[in-house]
Structure formats: structure tokens, C-alpha cells
Length: 126
Image 1 (tube, helix red, strand yellow):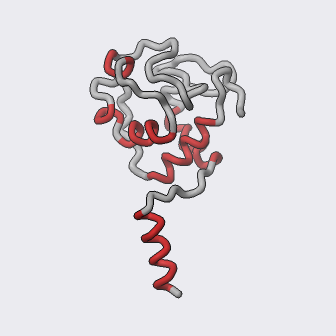
Image 2 (image 1 turned 90 degrees about the horizontal axis):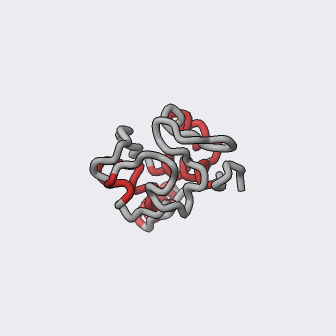
Image 3 (image 1 turned 60 degrees about the vertical axis):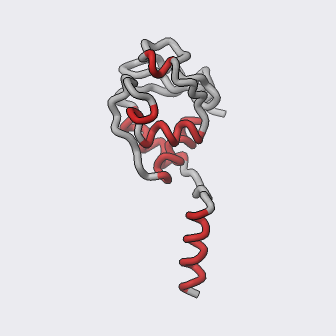
């Protein structure tokens, strides 16, 4: 039985299976982001851009003074592009203003994305 469980875990990892997303855990993780970014009703730019309506938004398109590299990155935010970016922001978009070093843990990234994507452009939740 133990070998079967180990095999299932290896198979899931090798096929790119994503684990269930935890919005509450993402909200807790967002507290780190909240030192620079705002989200929800009434959110405005701060040290970084507000993050309402992030899912489907073109990078560098809100009322914020983005770097040229971010405005010209061609990124449209979705789960995949967010995951690539948040792992290593400076590698994905050289010269970005974001100084955050990144998040390596895929589960934490999935949880954070689950929290972020629930906010519509007006700050209300879907």
C-alpha cells in the first residue's frame, strides 16, 4: 500500500497536477504583498499597483508608474503568467520596479492566486 501512495504522489508531480487552492491561506500570504499592493473595494496604487481585476489584465495597464520593461512585457495576467512571474520577478521582467525576491513554493503561489483572482476590477469579489 505504501508503494502505491508513493507512486501516486510521483505520478501527480510528474504530470503537473495542481493541488487544491486555499483562498484563506492566500489571504494570509497576501499580507506580505500588502506592504506594497492594495486590493479590494477602494484599493488604489500604493508603492505598487492595486491588484483588483488582475486575472485577464494586461501588465502595466493600470494607473501606476510602471517600468518600461513591465509595460512592454506582453504579459496578460492569468494563473500561468502569475506563477512564472512571482517565482522570480526580476528574471521574468528585467528592470521591473518590484523588489520582492519571489515565492518558490507552488502551493503558496496557487493559494495566493486563488485569493487574488476573486477580486473584480471594481474591488468586489466574484
